[in-house]
Length: 161
Image (tube, rainbow, N blue to C red):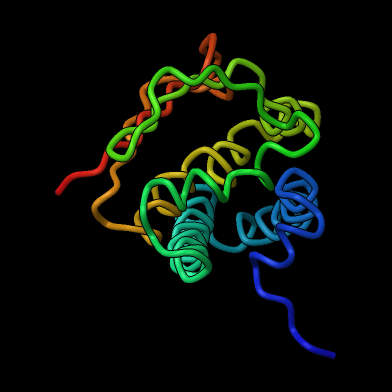
């Protein structure tokens, strides 16, 4: 059997379902790790692993159709599939992609699972690392997230030349 790439998995099942499957496994892993190493150390380890995975997924994503901002925008469907994210685009051109997320099924799912803090690490924090792996000249600025109780998430991607 051929191993599917992360992007093939994302295309096949979408990111929301993938995050739920990952969260169920990582939650159990974190419980065990915390009992062995303590909460702080286990959370640090999980964050670092997720960071590395996200950077590598960004690199893999950039190999599909290049690493321009427009290529990044064109690859967003698995994240938004089935209304997973409701967004209002504020600015979209070759140098900037700014939007607000006004509804997030990821945040809703993690809250329902009772793992909102872990959900932030599994989804929200990895956004910065994904784009870093995709193209180091594209920077994400975000100061608000629904996951942390804000009214919306403010995604601001800008190309730094």
